[in-house]
Length: 347
Image 1 (cartoon, one colour):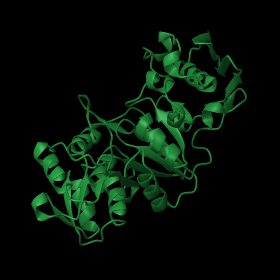
Image 2 (tube, helix red, strand yellow; image 1 turned 45 degrees about the horizontal axis):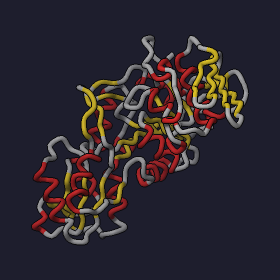
Image 3 (cartoon, one colour; image 1 turned 45 degrees about the vertical axis):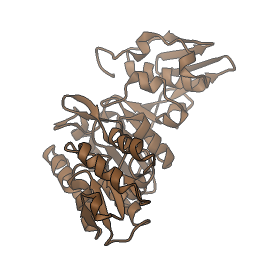
Image 4 (cartoon, helix red, strand yellow; image 1 turned 135 degrees about the vertical axis):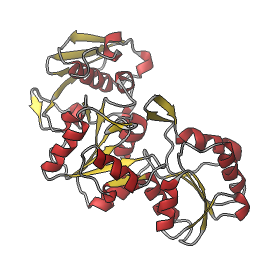
């Protein structure tokens, strides 16, 4: 794993040895209608090397065609097949429970409707039609009436598939409630849990691997609880990029299943040599060195032994030392500098 490579100096880039780069969208490629700095040119450079690039999104509101069109508008070479959506994975799951031709109550938008129609399912918005299943995904128009119809339908013993359970979604004005909050509202009403297709569950990753025929994919995301956890569950190497939801504080506190193999400031880091991390782990002390940065966990104290001009290397060292200590974050005293957003950015 990238975070626990022994040695000094620089190692290979994160994408070395990969045959497919899979990228999350919100917080990685764009935020709302705006491309994230350095994302487009970096992904174009990776494509120029002959590597496949695919995009995975939990956002169920839009179709793959609409997402691909937005990506092309940024200057990326993207076709609908390049985009793997949670409704696509959810529809694959649905086939395991009800056959095409069945009636499905939809809570969500066009992204879900399009995939269900492609697969031969019929669609309703009313529980009075006695649907055979419920599929729920995010759309900005979803309100109480739509959630109530799902609850009414689920009073019967029928399959309920959620495209994803993201608690939040990044938008132009900030961070807003995501599909997970809406699914939770229905769960509270019906006291049932849905099957989930999107990250961090594996169906959406399996859909991507099947589509591209990949054997050595690497996944790039901005969230630990969906992107990084999901990649780990799917057996993929993972990259956390600091342009979206999760920042230094979350990375330092990450539990074992949510730790990325690589941490980069922006997508330029995908092609750049990645620093090796040297670790000295003892019963009561763990030290990690990355470049000129060194951090030690001594008892309950996290100590910066050697600062660095690279804020990113210091963060990498802190994450590695805390992980190597195998201590719970709430039991540690962590210097504020390690989780404060640097003024000069992640360099």
